Figure 1 (cartoon, rainbow, N blue to C red):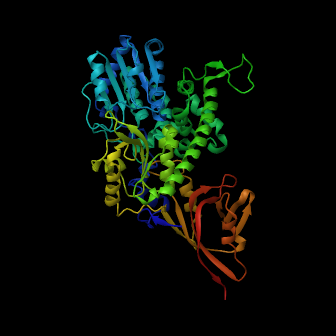
Figure 2 (figure 1 turned 180 degrees about the vertical axis):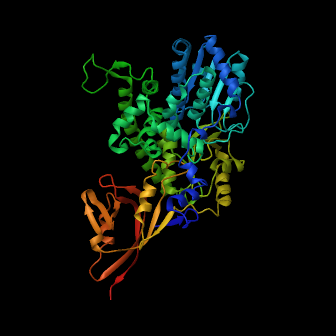
Length: 575
C-alpha cells in the first residue's frame, strides 16, 4: 500500500480547512460561502457586446441561422442553453429561422458538409476557435460567425466574432462552453431587461462538471452550486429520478459526474443519429415533454410517451452497451500493454493493432481508464494516413492532475516531434508521424526520468489511530457536495490503529466493518483474505493503517470511513 502526503498538513486548523488550503483554497470561508457577487460581469469577456448585438441584428432580420452542436456533454448543454433561452425570448426566430446540426460521429467543430446553402449566420458553441480557414471561407460568402467557446486558441480569428475566456483577460479560466453561453445569455438579459438565463444554470452546471472544469475558482464553484440547487431541466429531473437510490435527491458534482454526464457522453460516442437527436431534444425545455410514439418493450402501436422519458431510457441502454464494449477492448489492450511491456516507458503510448480499430469512438474513455490503472500519462493511438499517405498515429492523450506533470499537452508540444495536440492541458486529441514515434518515446523517457508514476494514494490528512476526533470526520463528510475537479474527494489516512477481534465484523455480501467507538470503517465486497489479515486472538495484537474517504451513515448519521485500502503495519503477542 504505497501513499504520499499530497501537501503539508496544517495541524493548527481543522482538518477540512487544512485540506482546502492544501488544494489551493486560500480563503476557505469565502469558498464555502460563495455568492452571486462571485459571478463576474459578462462584459469582461472580449467581444461580448459585439456578439450580442450581432445576434440581435440577425434575430431582427429573421436571418436563416445554423447552430452547430458539438459532440460531447458540454457541446449539447451549450447549444441547449442557447436554444432554450432564445425560445423564451424569440420563439418565432427559433421555430422558423434556426436549424441545428449534430455530428454523426465524435467529430468537433463546424461540419461544412451539412451547412444549409441559404444560411447567413452560424453560431458555434463549445468549439470553433481554431477553425481559421473555415472562418475565412464563410466570411468570403458573406456569412457571419459567432463563436462561444473556451478552448485554447494560439491565433485569434479575424473573420468571426469570438467570445472565449481563454483568448482574453477574463479571470475565470475554468469556464466551459456551457458557462460561456450562460454568460452570453445573461448579457442578453441585461440588454432586453429580462431574467431568463438563470433558468438554465442547471444545464450550465452539468456542462461544467462533465467537461471536468476546475471547481476551485469562486465563479465556477458558484455557478455549479447554484445550478445544482435549482433543477428545472426535465432531462436532469428524470435522470435524478432514475438514479434516485444512488443520488438520494442530493445532487453534487461527484454524483453528476458519475450518474448523469456519462450517459450523455455515451450517446455522443455510440448512439445512432436518431439517439443523438432524441437526447438533444430532451434537453430543450420546449420540446422535452412532447408526446411521441412509445418504444417501451411491450408498448401498443398507439402508445405514446414523452421525449424526455424515452431519452432517459435510451441513454441508460446506450451507456450499458458502451461499457460492455469499453471493458472488452480495455481487457484486450491491457494484454497488449503487458505483452509488449509498454508501461516501462514514462508515457504509456499504445499503438493499437488492427483488431482494436473499432475502438475509435471509445478512445478517450479507454485512455482515461488506462490512466487510472497505470497512473501514467497515456497516448492511445490508431493508425491513419496524412495527405502524403504517410503513416500517422492519432488518438487521445490523457493525464492525471496529481502526478507532477501539470500540462501533458504542452510537454508533448515541447518535443517538436508531434503533428498535433489540441484540446485541454491533460485531455486532448493527438497525432504523431510514425517516423517520429520512437524519437518521441526516447525524448519522454529522458525528460521525465525524475518523475515517479508508480501508483500510489494521495493522502490529504493523517489521523492518529489512538486519538480520532469523529467530529472532524463528520465535518469533512458534510462538505461532500463541493468535491469535484481540482477538489477531488479527499483521502485520509488513519495510522497505527490497534485492533482486536471485537472490533471486526462481517456483514452481508462480504462487507468488512472495523468499529472505532461510534465510527465504522467499511469496505464493501472485501475478499476473504482481508478478514484473515485482521484476525487476532486473546494473546495477539495488530496495528493497521487505513486509507479511505469520509462519509456519514445514512441510517443513523454516525461517521464512516469508506475503506480504499488497509495494511497491517505491526503484529505481535501480549506478554
